[in-house]
Image 1 (cartoon, rainbow, N blue to C red):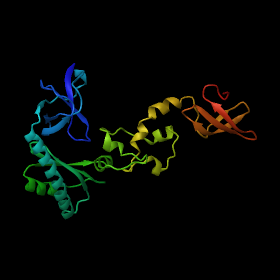
Image 2 (image 1 turned 135 degrees about the vertical axis):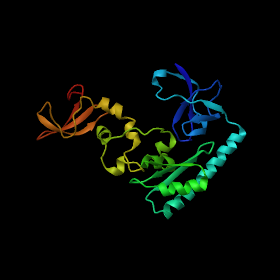
Image 3 (image 1 turned 90 degrees about the vertical axis):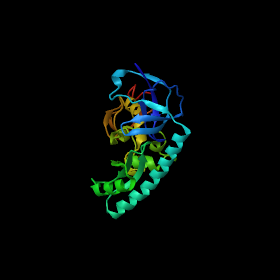
Image 4 (image 1 turned 30 degrees about the vertical axis):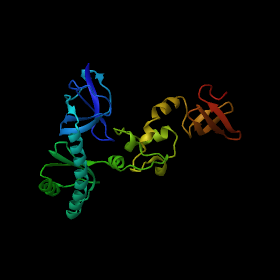
Length: 265
């Protein structure tokens, strides 16, 4: 087992784990950490925890130090300059007539790299754009294409439920969501009902899918032909949580059925 501590490099970003490096640090303390991109400013998101070394896929980096007031000022300057860099990058995108939408930018803490994130429906040749940006900011430029879910995470919004988007509030990773999850929950397959603001399937379809999969065991699908106490009929509705369903039998009408006792309540 090895002791690690979780750190968020972005307010809405995922948690990365680092070696405490003999520092005793509480949650919400800001720190400077070493990453593959260089030094980064982050906020401690977990207490010190132990994880199995066999689960570590890449060598862990260290916490360099607890952030000072000067570090915090540098971080604020980096955020301000990154916001200005987004505006400049968008101007250059328009100048070079590139089919891409720049949604975010970030400096490493030591300003050795400036990363731009963009959305596009196709591959983009941004070599001239990168050269122009490098000549302005005198640092290493990287442009990374991300998906529409990432754009929704950055811009935020209000979902169909009336709450702020999950991705902009607490989701760190995007799980795979399939249309079968909507079918499994017996939801209408109307895109306006099951798609989020990003145009993709709602992330929340994943939340209860495991429970619905368990509750659906032993239940027929709507349209299935089943045997009743009268005769064979067609399933016309399901109550997955209660484990009940209704069967329409010709010349008889609707018969209530249940999963456990095959029709007798």
